[in-house]
Length: 149
Image (cartoon, rainbow, N blue to C red; front, side):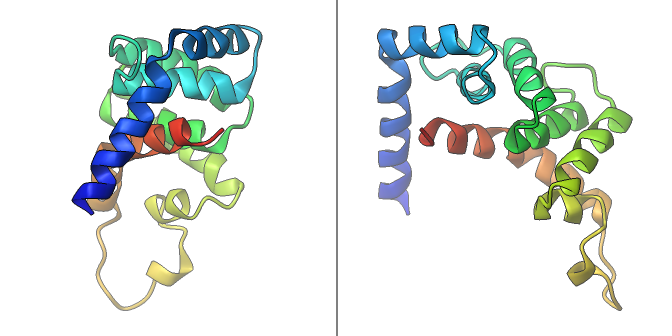
């Protein structure tokens, strides 16, 4: 697992640090390409190939999310939940989780307490799960976005 993590980081960083790749991503994002916008947002969020900037990350992810990019929607929800790059707003976070859940995103459904599997006799804290998810989602999803082509 440790070796995989190291190789993963090298792959993401090497890809993002190529100036020509960055220029293409910036151009595509500026032209409205949702995948490029999410990718650029992920780069800003992680500081991969660009200086880390959570506000820029939020702005680019929001553009992608408004076009229906499900991973961007979930990242935006988590960023609102945490106040990461934007003022904390649980109501807005919930709206974005709702959008992702409506598309069948299982983690969003679970965060909202709409996952039938989690319902039942076992006591479960959706609030604790939501806070934990909000801490993990932006970084993990941003890495996933950078690995997809």
